[in-house]
Amino acid sequence: MNKAFVKESDQDEDDELPEALALPQGTRNYLTPGGYARLRDELVHLMTVERPEIVQIVSWAASNGDRSENGDYLYGKKRLREIDRRMRFLTKRLDIAEIVDPALQTRRDHVFFGATVTYSTKAGEDHTVTIVGVDEAEPLAGKISWISPVARALTKACEGDTVTLRTPGGVEELDILEVSYPE
Image 1 (spheres, one colour):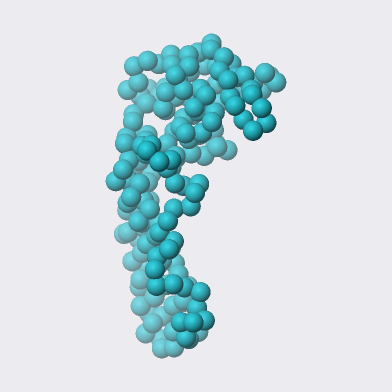
Image 2: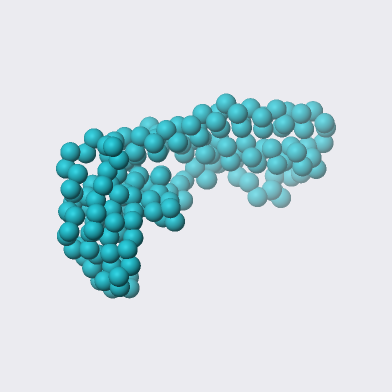
């Protein structure tokens, strides 16, 4: 097939990170030891298991002849690009990662990176969140990024304090009920 009809370029324009995954300029990539281990394990799995399997499939599919209509070959090449892109992303993130162990926190009454915080809104709703790295954040599981508005509002506050959270919907007061760190 002529390259003019294929929606691919010779450059890796997809090396740019999506805006949601990009770290703010001048910030560090803090990770908990568990988050670092998960990212490292994913990278090792991609390098040692997934990529070799896909390379073998692509090699087999290429030996079958006509590649332009060979689904195994086309899908395999696309999957290889996805794996390589993810491996580059993980390598860059792990290279700049700063591991912060919350269990070593000495000021356990204050909210810092790695703290699990229970807070109450003025509407009477209680929420429990753990402040983690950007790459570890899972808001539905209660793990919020340290650069999120809620985490920024809570950081450096103590148990019993009331902090102000500025949101697009207005200003909200949060009462900190409990601060804890892993042992």
